[in-house]
Image (cartoon, rainbow, N blue to C red; front, side, top):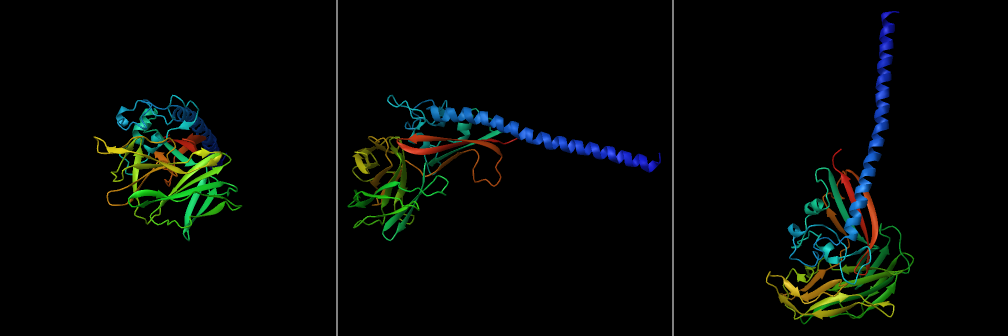
Length: 345
């Protein structure tokens, strides 16, 4: 054989080896990803069960604001009561303590990650909590245009019952309008008009009911002077001047949704926060007047909660797995999504 034939044979052998190595890599990489996903799935299922069915320890860590993150021994969002034993019923106060928006009762995701048994260098997590429906409200010529769509915001929901009422200050006391109801059309929208009631510097409360699934919506005008506060357990984060705190609830009476308010006394606690005598279950917002004559609004149900060590808005998300479950939060319908992320390979 000539020398060039040996060279050619050597090149062929090298090409075969390179091709074999490439094919092996192309085969093993998808298998590795699939194996990692299966591992993430098992982790997500275990943690999701703990979060949704376990109240945590201490069980009253949501409403008992003396319990800080250093006192938590386990993490869970389930509602704990002597009378409520249903599965997938979550505690609104525990959810509120996940909000890092000037919240003095915030629990850090790093602490929760530790309680969930996640190695923070290898794994991340995200909890997303959303209403069952996407409810959008726009001010429209003295009234409100309400749009009800599927959770992804794509499909309009027809024949959804919308009940609404507005609250405002009058002579430093909380006043309200009459109750208005409407039904969404084929495009998923309806219009709510409060005849004779001004919506300026007023908060509008909506409850959407579709086939027994109820979602609350609180609309606060973006340019208004309304003061926002935080209500966790019986602690209100700002001081008030009204004699009473008004709590807005949405009970069902004779098969119809009502929106009404109940009043409770308050006092300044030793920790400097306003202590409310009692918080009615299912309270959507708490209302009061501030010392400078503004309407104070403390929401207990938020349109969307995102909490965790990894942000869903990140431009480059790591390999992850997501589970989704429908839950009830004090009678309202929500979706919980739990994501677990593999940070390193």
